[in-house]
Amino acid sequence: MGLWRGIVLLLAFMIIGRGEGQLVENFYRSSCPNVESIVQQAVSTKFSQTFTTIPATLRLFFHDCFVEGCDASIMISSPNNDAEKDAPDNISLAGDGFDTVIKAKQAVEQACPGKVSCADILAIAARDVVVLAGGPSFNVELGRRDGLISQASLVAGNLPEPTFNLNQLKTIFAKNNLSQNDMIALSGAHTVGFSHCSRFSNRLYSFSSSSPVDPSLNPTYAQQLEAGCPQNVDPSIAVDLDPVTPRAFDNVYYQNLVAGKGLLTSDQVLYTDPTSQPTIVDFANNPGDFNGAFTAAMRKLGRVGVKTGKDGQIRTDCTAFNS
Ligand code: HEM
Ligand SMILES: *[C@@H]1O[C@H](CO)[C@@H](O)[C@H](O)[C@H]1NC(C)=O
Ligand SMILES: CC(=O)N[C@H]1CO[C@H](CO)[C@@H](O)[C@@H]1O
Image (cartoon, rainbow, N blue to C red; front, side):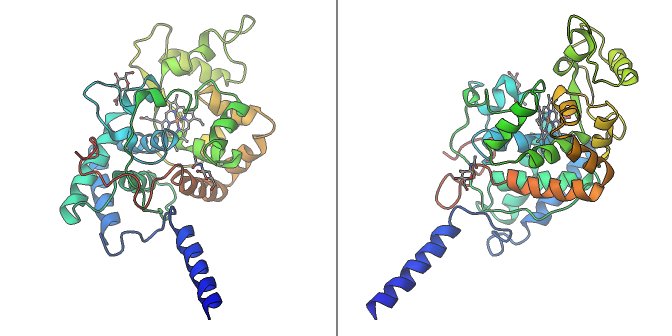
C-alpha cells in the first residue's frame, strides 16, 4: 500500500513541520526540569535587594522582543558599544534587568549546563516579576534560541515613542503581530517603574502655543509633575509612571488614565482616543478583564520573531555570543 504509506508519511511531516518553530510550555521537561523554579529563586533574591528588578526586567523583555525578536539580542555587550543595548532608544534600560538575567543564567548553568537559552530565562523572569509585584501568573512557552545578531543600528524605528498617537502605536504593535487590545493590555506594564522627565516634559511646558500644559492632563497632576520635573531639571531625574500605586502590578494604571493621570502622551492617548477608550474603561473597572488580556498578550509578545530548532544558539554567557 505505497499510496497509504505516502499519505501517512506526508501527514507525519506536516505535523512535525508545523511543530517546528513553535514554543511549548514543557520544552525543558527532560533537559532541565527545574528551570522555572531555579529562575524564580534567582529573581526573588534579586528582588529582595531592589524593587527596580521588577520594572527593569519587564521592560527589558519588551525591548528585546521588539528588536530582532525575543532572542536575548539585547543582552549582548559589545566592546565597541554598538550592540542593541547601546542604541539611544534603549532609553536608560535599568542595569538591574540585565543583572537579573545574568544571575538567573548562572544558577541555571549550575544545574543544566548548556541547555537553557538566555531568551527563555528572560521570558520566565518577566513573568516572575509580574507575580512578585502582585500581578497575574501565567504559563510561559519555551524553546527560544539565542540570536546571533545584536546591533544598535537595528533599534531605531522598532520601538514605540512616548509621543506616539494611537495609530502609530497600533502600527508598531501590529508589525509584531499584536492587536490594539494586546497593545493596551501591555501598556499596563506602566503600572510599575519610572520615566525620566525629558520623555514627557513637552506636556508641561511646550504643548502648544495656546496652551503650554497638555489639556488632557489632570490639572492637579500637572502641578505635581511640574514640581517633580522643573524646567532644565537634571536629566537623571525620573518620576513614577503610576502616581497612585507605583509598586503594585494592578489595574490602577487604567483608572489613572480615566482621571487624566497618564504620564506619557502614549499612555493618555489610550483614553482620549474614542476608539480605545471603551477598553480603558473596561480594564479600569474590571481587574479580571485586564489580567486576562495582559497574560494573553504577554504570551503573544513572547512569540515575536523567535528562533527555534537549529537556528541561533544556547549562549553560555548571556552577554556574549559563544566563540
Ligand atoms: C505602548 C508603547 C510604549 C511606549 C511609548 C513606552 C515608553 C516608555 C518610556 C518613555 C518609558 C520611560 C523610560 C525612561 O525614561 O527611562 C517607559 C518605561 C517603562 N516601560 Fe514602556 N513603553 C511602551 C510599552 C511598554 C510595554 C509593552 C512594556 C512591557 C510589557 C513596557 C514596560 C515599561 C516599564 C516596566 C517601564 C519602567 C522602567 C523602569 O522603571 O526601569 N512599556 N516606557
Ligand atoms: C507574525 O505571524 C506570522 C504568521 O504566523 C509569522 O510568519 C511572522 O513571522 C510573525 N511576525 C513576527 C514579528 O513574529
Ligand atoms: C544599559 C545600557 O547599556 N545603556 C546604554 C544605552 O545607550 C547609551 C548610549 O546611547 C549608553 O550610554 C548606555 O550605557
